[in-house]
Length: 313
Image 1 (cartoon, rainbow, N blue to C red):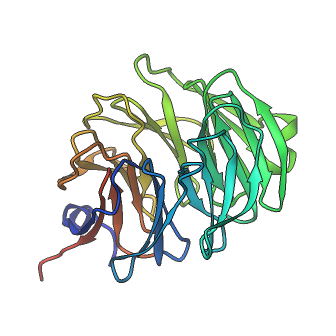
Image 2: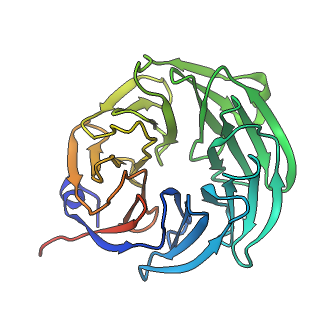
């Protein structure tokens, strides 16, 4: 099945999970698409089986809390930020719920955590106005950048470059092999007066960058030229929260949640809103991701919802 405007409009909630008692702060699909991992403000990590549509395992991190969870390249390990004790990043074995390694260094809350798509390196950005480059095999930071403001960061799909969004007004692109020499290009964008950038993602085809905010606007820019392509609006965010925005695997659609529990979808080529999808999410939908392998969408507030397309014959 190919993803079209009509298929998107026919997505319906197939299952709702109520495993959590507090906000789900991050979700991440495994590369194979078979499982989804989530972290929540209730200090729990839940792993879901995407093929059977069932919760598979729940782990607790009561001591450190858990935030920004993401899979590494091994499905049995994950990285996450901390909400208690300190701002150390932690590398967890999901098999036995034991920590493999700690990555200390940030002095304020980590707000961005991204695994490289090709190897063991990962990026972290913090409210201490730094971006750090790490390798899973060493607790020592491999690279450090000081920035003038809150950072957001993302790897491109090839894992050769990364983008850093700085001060909610410019995007700098760095070559990973020589990033200590500074950015090889900088895109200056018009600053939004009433919101900050809270997330950034490359499209799976590497041609676009989607910038999400804590306001009522998303920006889509050309990943090579920095040209503004689309501005997506018309969704509710009256609480100033960070709403995740994500691409479909074919890069043709962008999805974002809202504070009224609805999911909005736009066509990335035309900028036209394709669908507004209703679900009984009681709170702001801060996590939205499309499965990389299967025709399935996951959205989360306190509850987790799995969406599938229902096409009439």
